[in-house]
Amino acid sequence: MPTFSYKAASFDGEVVERTLEAADRNAVLEFLDRAGLIPLQINEVRGLAASRLSNTALGTSKKVKLEDLVLFTKQLVTLLKAGVPLLSALEALYEQSEHPTMRQVISDLYRDVEGGSSLSDAMAKHRKVFPELYVNSIRAGELSGALDQVLERLSTLLEHDKATRTKVKSAMRYPLIVIASLSVAFFALMTFVVPRFAEMFLQSGMELPLPTKMLIAASNAMKHYWHVLVGSVFGVTIAFKQFVRTRRGRYQWDRFKLKLPIFGPLTLKVAMSRFARMFQTLNSSGMPILQTLSILADTVGNEVVKEEIHKVAEGVQRGEGIADPLRQSKLFPPMVVRMIAIGEQSGSLDDMLLSISEHYDLEVDYAVKNLSTMIEPILTVGLGIIVLFLALSIFLPMWSLTSIAR
Image (cartoon, rainbow, N blue to C red):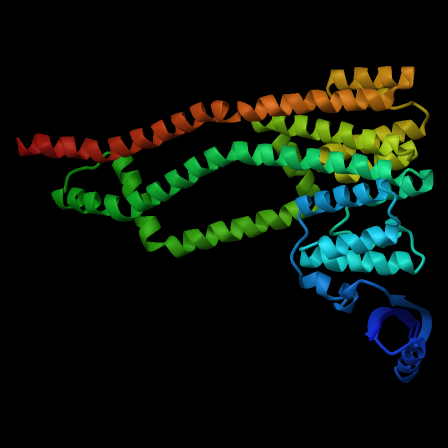
């Protein structure tokens, strides 16, 4: 039995979109009439069994990761460049996709495009899958007639973004493992080892040195009030997440990250690389400069950088160009400003933006490769301080006991 997608309105003005298995269009009309709905659009869905899935399935399905979106983009651009029509390309992608949520999304895209919607408008209904940068780039490609070229640039951009994130996560893996291991060891020491020494020291009746008193107090707190400590940590974590979700909190946190000794410069370099590459992708698509800057501000991933981009957009609106507002900002490095200024004057802004992105890609690679080297001295010093404190706390009273025994 064929499947039909329909759009209908109730008498109170509510519009619904669903799919229905029926013998023909007349059967769909009869169903809508019985349901008290006014038909607005009815289309037979061909070749996509995914349309049988509930439209609400997307909200509870598996999340679409960045690599899934990269794969979808690369496959779509390959099919379009080979001359395959868009609907046939979507049908082929549906049949090849193994991701349940992505199959549902492709099914929805197919239904909307078959119903007369543009690809960008269809993608705009799935903001959790297709970010604003992606949707607007597709829209610019549709208007300029160069959709396959835009998709190719988007594929490169997404792969670059994925590679950068992977490098940063890989560099952070070693320090996090070391910190987690030290935390577990410290907790075990404070919970099982220190109490035995504490009992021996207290039975001796001797005056304990300050480090030992501090260690015993910390051990007692962890042993008897662990639930309070765990609850406090949990509460602080929840409060921090809620604070960061606010506009002011997100701005303060992003500004703090930029000021960190080692991670601050790396965060700025990653932001500059994303800024330049996204700018180049949108600008080469033929999108108006103010719209490009607006999208950049929302997708660059840092509220401080976002605010500076908005200031640049205000300067462009006043007729100041791009380089002058960037020069007034204390955030953008002088090299970025100079290269964009040269690009504006020579008419080769896209080339300059690509050069900036490639430069900061190298900077990020170098910083990431040396991240562990820079963090190791800090970890070593921190570990040394902890070991020294524990040694003094335990051995100082033991030396006193030895002296008394003599």
